[in-house]
Image (cartoon, rainbow, N blue to C red):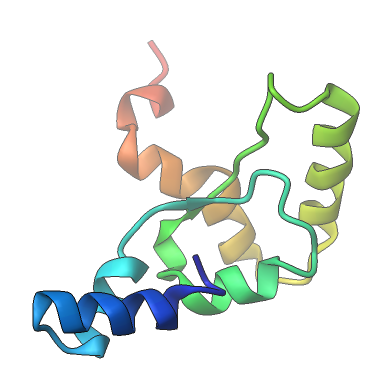
Length: 104
């Protein structure tokens, strides 16, 4: 989405008779996961998406476990704040699915 967002927004703004900025705001409101996102894709994703709309994803079981491990290690090494890393790794998902954070 980050790469094509401007083009999508321009087309949709014409079709829907809305401003490009409004369409971009709608696109930024989607939730995005990091599944198999190489370090080269992360800057675009993090620059485009709302900070609290990026979650960890692995593509498991569709991707082999060793591939998931490699991309997870890359995400862990990616330079970002501790707060952003915690949000991607767990906190944003708990906001969406609070029952998974409860200990019973």
